[in-house]
Length: 378
Image (cartoon, rainbow, N blue to C red; front, side, top):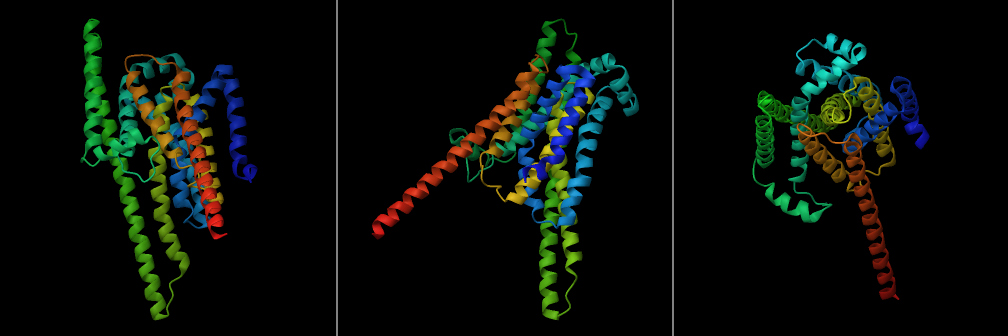
């Protein structure tokens, strides 16, 4: 079962790691491996959400998502998008950006380094909004209750996450400007760049969230309309072909999934800039991670175990929050790439083992209750 589900992911991993060794030696091997783990850890909640929607779709649309969707995810978001970021931030054409990335790595590295404050502010704000919107939501299941319970109460205040994100951005920008002023003012203009890029990240998050909500509403309307038409057809005796109904609903599901996948993969792409500026290594690592996310989605659907490890989603979002902070800090200070890559792994592992302990405790409690019932019955 595992080999059948993850076979392609294993093959792509082997090819990607071998390509990394040939491209940049064992250092490149390590960076690609860290990027793949980072992408998987950040996108686990994406796999959970995808699986919840994918299980409602027909086999045909599942294959569409796992084939066409992979092409969009790997080549669109993981390969094209980083080039677009560099092209926009460095004010050059995408063809020139690709040419620099492949043929003039020193110049490309310099351009990315110069653009890093804008990239970090843009990505940091986007990731911070994902984390804040998650942590301020009132949930039935809470992992770190001493943190999540009071924050869920605060989350009832409208637009609180946006206000906090803007405050963080202002503080970061002000700190950047003060630091530059103390060093002769050579980079004072960068403070404005950080502020504008951070606001752009916030706007991007709100647009993506709006699109996701739009497709979700359309999906609910389509399912409701389909149900009404089926009831009407049953009363009149003229049944509408089920394939058409399923196709219409599945099409909106597919669109919704692609918007969600783009929003979730965005954090991995942005986070990758905190680890490497090499577009080839970025594409290899994130591509491997994207394949595992797809395989994990299929596995969750086929096993039907979405609710087994309930804290994993929490761990993924805490990893996103940590990565947001790291990106904002790297505007001024360098942080070791290994630390950046491993933070998410540690948080995911912690949430996984917390889920395992929870499951064992529940199983033990159920066993105790059953014994008590048997004893009382005797």
